[in-house]
Image 1 (tube, rainbow, N blue to C red):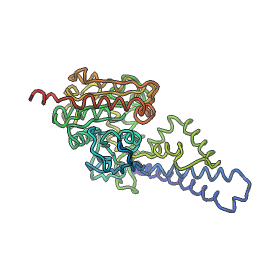
Image 2: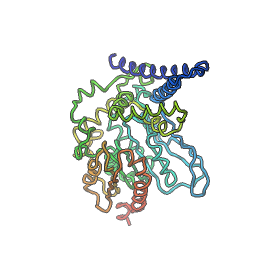
Image 3: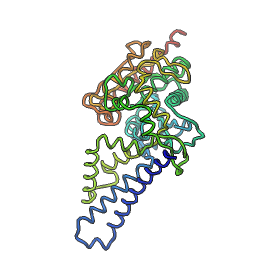
Image 4: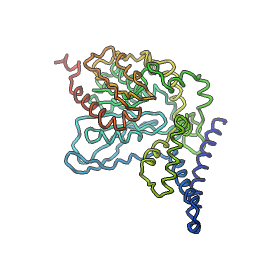
Length: 420
């Protein structure tokens, strides 16, 4: 019960702060107070508005907000989000552009399960939709999944990816962003051995910790410094009675968010103080830069305890992917089995989460892949976010990834060449 009480306490504190913000905003907006020439009144209303919005966003899944897209014909086409595969812990969704001929490029964008929703990749999706049929792994909040659905660890995650790839077929081009990169590599290798006809055409790994020890960062140092017992004791809680997943052991999104904020506390504090002043002067708006960023940043989701703990232990501490000894469902996955899936890695020179060297290590693991099917790119001056959603992605990396897909997607499979 201690773990559940802690979970409910965190939710109570969040709810209280949201209420305080709403109360301050309502009180300061009382018409009679407008007659008082006190700037503190306006500041109180602004503080309340920013505070209420911030704490409210923490428990709301953001909308994709992709309603239409301008196509080559110069017309705006509606975008319909369709569920292709529905599973307990995550769905495969398709951004179907209505009235447009199907694009030859089929892209599976593997979203991270690291505290934020798949909507973190909204700008990435928007940039790819004009040139491809885009599919995304839409992971669900663990607090909303009943205990009866069972466990979900990194092996289950890998099996989900394999099912998604099978559903899309062999003409798929997979792009894995950050956390899922090592598991996507493992899923591709596992398919290469068990179901080679379901392998994707290309695999692009962006800023992922294939070998976390290749270039240590604060993230890897933390993973090596703490014991699994310490992590389980300090990070794991049990979902409270408010949600469908009551009783499930999770790494709570609110706890993750506190860690995210603590890493750059001064920068976040400055950003919120400046936003309060902007709202006080009447310069704030629903869709200004601050709100666009923090509406997504503050929206966090719970991870299952077994997924979080197995990620730390098996990917970071034991380096099972880096040492090519990852096991799924009792069978060891050999990354060397990848022989005709073109693999490209993308890293940011200033990435302080998955530093340069961690992701490109995937190419050395692909011992069965010829050099002609391997590629890597190091983006100068780019941080972690920039390599998949920022200016670096839009201007430099995205064109390179699409060129890589086009170059390799039409290459005949070895099986087809031998049959001929």
